[in-house]
Amino acid sequence: MRFAVALVAIAFLAAACGGDDDPAISGAAAEHNDADVAFVQGMIPHHQQAIEMATLVIDKGDRADVKDLAQQIADAQGPEIEIMQRWRNDWGAPETANGGGMEEGEDGMMSGAEMSEMMSASGAPLDRMFLESMIRHHQGAVTMAQTEVDAGQFGPAKDLAGRIINTQRSEIDEMQALLEVGS
Image 1 (cartoon, rainbow, N blue to C red):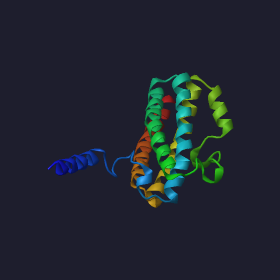
Image 2 (cartoon, rainbow, N blue to C red):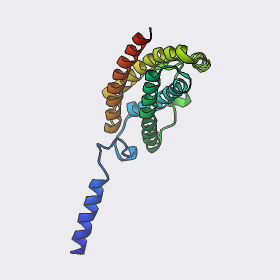
Image 3 (cartoon, helix red, strand yellow):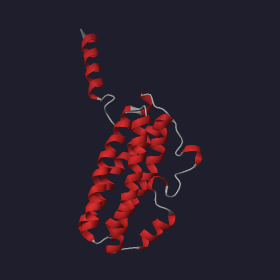
Image 4 (cartoon, rainbow, N blue to C red):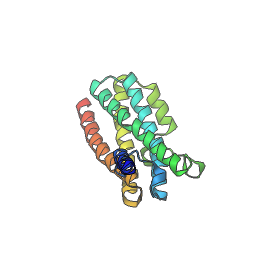
């Protein structure tokens, strides 16, 4: 009887801990492929730059609506970075592919010169620069995420990519509307 109770308790605990639908599932527990690894290796620095851009406008921008969107972006992408870092570490993958990072301008990434220009801006010019740059940045993320949806194997990464596509397309629409209001 005790054995049966113990088995039921173990089964209950295993079910309560989540399954493959959990986006934070350990990557070591599931199959993944090169596309999954490339996705996290590229999206982590991409998200990190987006947070850096958002922080600049939160700190030095003028418009409350732009600052609110920037905060929304930072709040969403921080936890996604943590999840992707855990997957990458579980898979034993290096931080970047072949020891290199993303190229400037690749997939919407801002160049060092563009980031320097943004860092030195403030007020309305920064708001506009942020919106224009983040639209391009998000378009690059959507492209990267679509590649994962099409070629990835790891279910939670494909799910995250799908959410990135939907969220960032919506934010692109919002940023385009904010640009029109600010014109």
